[in-house]
Length: 241
Image 1: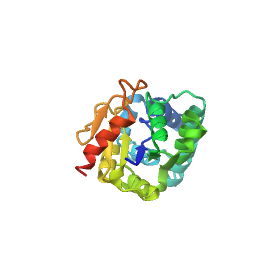
Image 2 (image 1 turned 180 degrees about the vertical axis):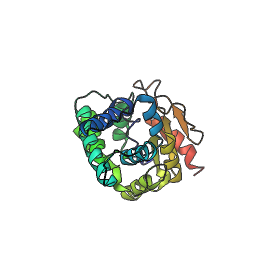
Image 3 (image 1 turned 90 degrees about the vertical axis):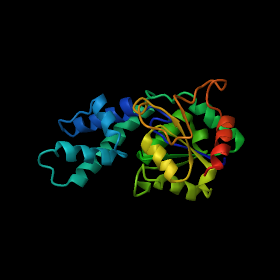
Image 4 (image 1 turned 120 degrees about the vertical axis):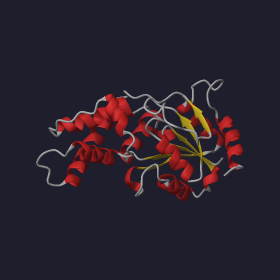
């Protein structure tokens, strides 16, 4: 195993309910729109990958605000506002790393395993999460592939294929850590092994194609997921790829 590729939201940090959802609502309010995404509705909307795509889907289904002449411009404006609000939430320290993330990252660094984040979220927001919560030293170890860097978002494999090409590694030498079915399908379509760490919004999803499913990585190496375990799992999976 030469590279460990992390999704961001739900994997590094459980950002969706108390981060992205809150930031979307703040952007709607700042734009004087009578729109509020409650917790159950946002869970449904997460089936749509990408924030701009999620808003477009919502307005297509529920109706666009009156007087909107250019839907694309509205989506872009709302997404910029939402990203600004989300950055403030991240930088405030309100959203902690998920259990075991820092430990596993440090194990990978010590072993010379390459690291990347592959996310449909805005690149600025993903970079802020990595740098703020993992620190600038660890941030320098990460390649970040995020946002609109690819044409098709998860469950399409594009983001992981791009990471494979940029890292100049065969897909079978990469292991992906995801929390959603869309992410799992993306990794598998790219020909990569995939570990699932269930998150608040994805615990009920079908992960039958995953190579391993856990509730968390775990801070305690005695009971959590370790790099050596992942390497053993990966070695078995590689024989099937």
